[in-house]
Image (cartoon, rainbow, N blue to C red; front, top):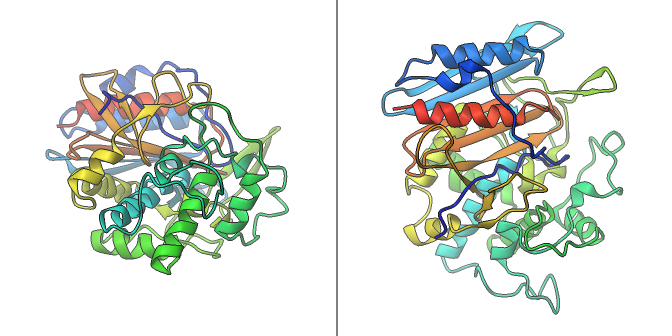
Length: 368
């Protein structure tokens, strides 16, 4: 396996900026052991700077067990504060759940990682491995003009629809090209071999066994049930509440609703060996360089996850990121699954992503 570096595939609807940015002095302190006061000050500073209406964080470690924090507001109209346990749309972090299901099916002998998918792509050598790590070259359906955000906000999409749209998007000739079309096809493959849609398999294989009660596959329901953060998009000085959305558009690539605490539990279970046999987890963490024009320098992509060298201490972090209209999330874990931090804001797109990445890095280094 390569000594991998990182990336978080942070957008369904928009690419992530690649330039690193400095962070506030508070961020470098992050937390010590389980003293989260410095992390709380960092969250407060991000909100006070006007970068986002609200922000969530959950840290997990042997010393902390699990602590959730919040700052700012979950709902601008009512002024309801971020408490720390709000549900959010986690966007592309859904890909990590989808990849886990696919690799479970590989372990069961129902899917092959390296057999060309000629049933779906005749006369091509694209494999499931290529889909999982974005080396297929397929165009990204999220960049297609066939889908209009306002017109199609509540429209139902089948994975077949998204895959067909993606095939009409120009292909990439780069070795690595981030594309949600890959995961639309993976949803089709899962349905073929199990008879169930990907949401059913994620729920059956991951959410229920791990008791991730804050995580939910929305299907056609545009609402987020229970306590949740509203999502906001700012465009030309105007603010739009984008909370309600039919997430069949995201599907296997980005539909999940979750909480920062549930995401920590997922990464702890995955990297701790509770969801995959050792052979499939090793495959998942075998990486290739990602395109720095889409991600950032040093990004290495595995099968549904990313790995990066830590800046504030030795070692690497493993995880994923997600962005959808009104939300952005970073989920980072130590490779052994013992320490996690997940940060989420209720604004997208946002220029503070590099700051969030650095805060996650610093926090993970300080956890014990």
